[in-house]
Image (cartoon, rainbow, N blue to C red; front, side, top):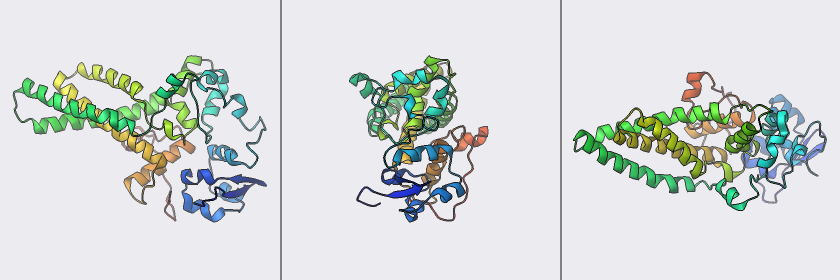
Length: 316
């Protein structure tokens, strides 16, 4: 990447400085570098860039975004004000607006305390949850020994923890598909608020690193609900071990999600294919590709995204 903060391309007679976007481009830096100071109009058309890609390009236009209100939706909101209080007024325009990404930071609340609860650095997740997981493994094992009278339940413990991790992969897929990607009616302000707060904002500002992992407070609420559900089927000791595995799966998921947005996986590695896959979900196929840490349930439920073969590996 150039160090002077400038990397211009030309599209339809307008110039765009995409320097800040180079590391986030789904096609990698190596696919973009040859086009510095060149016209990319034909290239973008030939490679069938998505509607979201063309919309995002406007962010980098010299002189600012095109103010044509028929083509640009950002005039519908005031980016200098908290966003959560504005989204419900979008009504039937909400779905198109939230699916049209921009490269900005977003503020949800005017209250600084509430706002701080919505911003989570990636390292907070393991710092909060790994001690909980360790405690659950220890506590669950001790209770399991008391319950079964087995002094060395290593195999059983590992199996229940593994079951929890497996269950998490389904929870991850289910939440992402049926909760995070619900389609709120344009007439339901409550559903628009809810959708935007839990996931819509991530699709609107996909490069905002402060909003890539789940804040501990809402995560704890979800964990509590799942824990009560598991209690209906298993003894308390088994429930705790399953929860330990589920939380380990959750932490892995959140770390993978952050890495898929900001990491640089090597070609042909598992995370390399996941990064390509997740980029397709964000910028081309938002109604498919709901798996983050795995494509397994997408394949089971028929929502998998097919990745095309590339002549040249991507370098981020």
